[in-house]
Every structure is written in structure tokens, then in C-alpha cells.
Length: 280
Image (cartoon, rainbow, N blue to C red; front, side, top):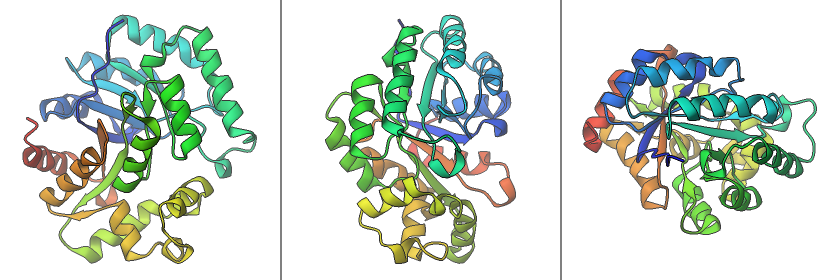
């Protein structure tokens, strides 16, 4: 079995906003992994082969396949096919999503365990999968039953705590939103548009409260302090520093989600960040 090398930095983008040209450019810029967000289904994952064909070393990861929407028996053949055709280049990220979006949502922890049991039975190695995890219980499970954890909507403080829970060894690959815009008012407005959905979801708000944020911080679109923590803004150097802060806190890999107005082309900003980090 070929080990999956995610690299230190990757990009996170909704699965339907990633094509072969973007993947190839991301690889040329020095990013090691493209994370496909937005709960892609096995049918959606047909795009993965095209991304892998268009690149030479890039890892494609799901961030994440929703356990409620996709049966483990359906995703396992997709993993098997991609792992055989592109050894060491497909990482299966799975998770339970959030209760507000899933009518059948119940017994989250037991559901995760059962899902991983099926992946085991279907031959998906623990080393080829990561688990969406925020709280300590699921983080521990990610270290025990998967290669590691892929936390979403977190800060470097969460990364520090997650590393303490995971211990040395398991992969810790958080997502981090950034905005390359030196106008604070414009940047915060863009961030609030993106974050509005998440700040209404119990799993994310509970995690933020564990980190010390208050109801007042979360209410009314988020306080400036919370918005700046979840989606740092400024020049490319500021964005790069937000990523390296996770590495300094114990992450092995950081997936950057570059927010742009009206979903504009992210490549100029990703290129600028890459240059600051010295990736290419």
C-alpha cells in the first residue's frame, strides 16, 4: 500500500468548483492536496479521476463524504478503483455533517463507528481515510480508526487542543478560510456572507464555545473578533501567516479555503499565498 503524502498545504473548494485546470495549477503552485468540499456523493466523485489524470503528484481528498447521504458500501468501490489506478493519491474524508441538514440525524458517535466498521469490512484501509472531527471524543476516534482528523471551521487554538487529544502520529489537517483583501470592511462583509450558514449550526457553535467564544460573539453575524479569527484577512503574507499558525499549533497539513467575492477566480490569491510560503 502506497502512503498518502498530503504535503504541508492544500486547498479546500467545493467539489463542483474544481476542474482539471485548477488542480493542475494548484499542483504547479506547490499545494499538495485538493480537498473536495460540499458533501460529494459517489456520482459526484467521478470528477476525481479527471483531476488525478491532469496532475502528477497531487492528492485529491474528500472534505467530506457525508455518512448520512452516502452509504459506506457505495463509497468503498470508488475508493478501491481510485486507489488501484492512482496509488497514494486519493484520501477519503468522511463525517456525519450536522443535525440541521439531516432529517435522520441520530446517535452520531454510534453512526460513525458503524460506518467505519463497514469501511473496514469493505477493505478501505484506515490509512486511506480521515474523519471530520471537532470534539475530543470524535478526535480520539479519528486517531484510532482513521489516519487522522480533518476539522472544519476551526482556529489554531482548536488545532493545539486537537493535537493534545490525538497525540503524536495521527494526521491533523484543519481547514482555514482566508481573504486576500486589505480593506477590513469589505473582507468582513465577505466573511459574514460565507459564515452565516455555519454560525447557525449547533455542532460548530458548540465547538466555538468550547474554545471560549460566547453567545454574543456568535450572534448577529458574528463579532469582528470571531469573524477575523475564522476568516483572517489582509495581504497574502497575512493569509500565509494564518496557515502557518496551524502548523505551529501542531497541524501536519492545512487546507486553505480562499474566499473571493462572487466566487471569483481563486488562483491569483492562491498564487500570491504560495509565493509568500515559498511553495513553488
